[in-house]
Length: 443
Image (cartoon, rainbow, N blue to C red):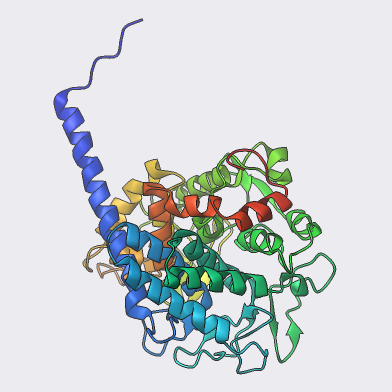
C-alpha cells in the first residue's frame, strides 16, 4: 500500500491562510452582532429592544440572549467585567421588582413575563401573551450570567442571589393546565391559550428548565407527553426528528450541549439532538440545491429557511405560478412555507453542527449584494426572487435581537464552547435533563 504523499508547503500555507481568514470573518460577525445589545439597551432598567427599529418594545427572549452574551463579551475583551455586571444587574433588579399581578398592564404573573414590554415602564405591550418559551429563554440568560459571574464581590454576589430568586419564583407547575400538558401561554383577558406544545420544537429548553426547578417543577410526565407528538421522518435520505424552520434545531442548543446525551426517544432512534440538528442542516442545504419552487439564488452556498422577515407583498407570477410573499413568518423545509426568503443568521447559527457546509455558505452570504459586508447574514431576511431583474436583492431593514443573540452564542459554541460549558456547570440544567430522562455523555 503506497503511503500518502506529504502535503506541499504551499498547500499547507493556503489552508492556514483560509483558516485565519475564516477566524477573522467570524470575529467580525460575532462582534458586530454583540454590539446590538449595548445599543438597544435601556441602561436604567436593563430592558433590551426586540429590534433596532424606532419604537420597538422590549422582548424578554432577546434579554435572555443579551444576558448570555455578556460573559462572551467579557472573555473576548469587548467589554469590562464591571460594566457587564452592572448591565446584567440592572436587568435582574428590574424583573425582581416588577409588577407580578398579572393585570393587563403588568410585567408578568407567577414568575413568568409578558412577551413584549414597554422599554421605559416595563409594562405589557401589544396585548402580548404571558409567554412560557420566552420566559424560558430569559431564564436561560439569567442562569448563564449567574454561573459565569462567580467572583466574591458584592455586585456579583447580588447578581447570583437575584438570579436564584427569579428562577425559583417561576411557577412552572401552574402552567400544566390539563394534567401533564404544558400551556404555551396565558392572557389576563382569557386565561390559558387553548393549544399546547405538539411536535419537536425549541420547547426542549422550556421543559428542561421547568423540570429543573426546586420549587415549582413540571411533573416528569410532561416531557414524555410532549415527545409522543414527535414526527420522525426520512427526507432526502436523512432520518431525523422533523421540524421545518432551522431555529427550532438551534435555540435550545445555544445553552445545552446535547452531544452524546440521549432521552428515551433518541435512545430508541440511536441518535442525539445534536446529530439531529446536523442532519437538519444538511436537509436545508439539499432543499436549496433541488430548489423545487425555482427561487433565485438558492444553491449549495445559499440556503437557510427559518423564522424571519420577508418582503410582504401581493402575489406575483413566478415560473408560471402565483407566488405569495410573507412578512415575518416561520419558513421551513421541505414543506414550507417558502417565498424565496433566506434567514442568513440561521445559516450562520448552524456553524457548530456542520462547519464543512456552513462556512462556504457564510463566506458567500458575507459578501452578498452591494450592501455593507455581513448585512445579509445579520439581517432578518434576504430575498433575491422578490427583486426586479438585475436589481439588488431585498434585504430586511434593521436588526432583530434574536438573530444577533443566536449569532453571538452559536459562533462562540463553535469557537470555544463557552455557553455549553456554563450550561453543563448548572445544577439546574443537569437536574432538568435527568428528570427528562437524559443520560450518557457528560451527564
